[in-house]
Length: 374
Length: 119
Picture 1 (tube, rainbow over the protein chains, first blue to last red):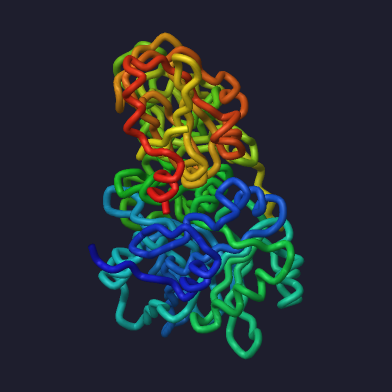
Picture 2: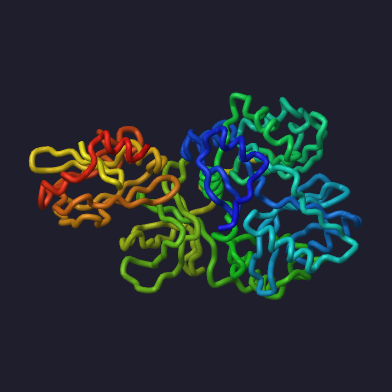
C-alpha cells in the first residue's frame, strides 16, 4: 500500500484524538471524540469546522478571465463567461458520452478563475484540463494551501469576529482578504445545506487559523462521517457514489446547473463534451433519474441496496447510491436512481435489506431545508 | 460475566445466557441508530450472524457466541437503539439463549482477561 498523504492540519487531528481513516489517498479524520451524531447536530445548530484540504485547488490565469471562462465552458456545461467577478458557481466536467467526470466549484475572482475539485478525482481532472488547455492559459495546482469549511448558523458571527467584511458576503460570493499578514480566500458556500464559508489559507498558517476558529465557543471540529450525513440530508451528491462517468447531469437531476445560455437555442449552446447527448436528454427525458428516498422504517438503506417496484418482483428497478441515518430528522435517509416511470414523488418502492423487502418512498430533496444567506 | 473475542458479554441466568456487546465494542461502533434482532425460537449455531447493528457510519453483525436457541429478545431496542451506546452492558442486552451445552461458555474470557485483550 502506498503511503497516505496528509493535510496541513494532520497534527491537529491527532492532537484532538480524531479517529483517522484513509479517504481518497489521505489520512483523514472520520470523527472526533464527540462522535458523528453530535458533530452533525453541532453543525446544524451552531458551527462546525471541517478540514477539506484534500480537495484540489486550481487557479487559471495568464489570459483575460473571459478567455479562461470560454475555455472552461468547452469542458463544463455551465455559464462561466457570465459569472460576475466575486461570484462562485457549481459545475461539472462531462465526457463524450455525456457522463460526469467530476463535480466542482468555480469562482470568478476578477483576474483569475479559482476551481475546487474532489480529492478522489483531482489527478484525472488535472490531466483532463491539461489535455484540452490552450498554452496561453496558465493552470496552477495549489499544493501549499489548506482548505477549511466553517459551516452552520453561527458561522457568520464567528467569521465576522475575525474578518468583519465577511458579513456582507452572500451565498456563493467569493472574496480575497488580507488577514494576519497572509492572503485568505473565502467563499460563502459549503456542503452541508447550512450557511457557512469555505476558506483557503496558507498551509503553514492552517493549524493556527483552525485553532483561532476553535477558540470560539460555538465551533467544534467535525469529521468526514458527519460531513457525509450532513450533505446527504441536504440532498447533495457525492461524486463516485451518486454521480459517475456513466451518469449524465440530466440523469443526476442536475439540469438546474446547466443555464439556459448553454442549452438549445442559447447564445452559447453546447460546445462541451457530450453536448449532443445531454441537450437531447433535456428535451426527450431520461430512462433513469436520481431521486430522494425515505425508508419508512428505522433500518437505514445504504449504498448498493436494490430497489423493487413491489415485494415480489425479481427485477430491480433502481438502486441506492447514498444512504444512512439523518441525525437532524432522526430517521434513515437515502438517494439513488430509479426508472423514470417510478420517480413520481410519493411512489412507494421496496428496498432489499439483508433479504427483506422494506418499504421506501420517493421524496423531495433536500431532507432538511437549506439555510443559506441569499 | 464472560467475554468473547467478538466483544460480546455473556451472563448466565439459570439455564439461559444473556448476550450483549461490551462498552468497548459500543464505543467503537459509534452512535447506534438501528438494531435488527433475531426471532425468539430461532435455533442458531456458533458464529451465525444473529444481530445487525447499524450505526450512523456503517452496519455491523453480531454472531451467536455458542450453539443454542434464542429464547427472548430485547424488544426495547427497536425504539431506543441509542441505549446500546448508553448502557451496553446493562439495559441494552440483545437476546437470551438456551445453550445446547452450557459448558460451551467455559472457554470464554473472564473480565480480567478481556481487559487485557482490549488493552
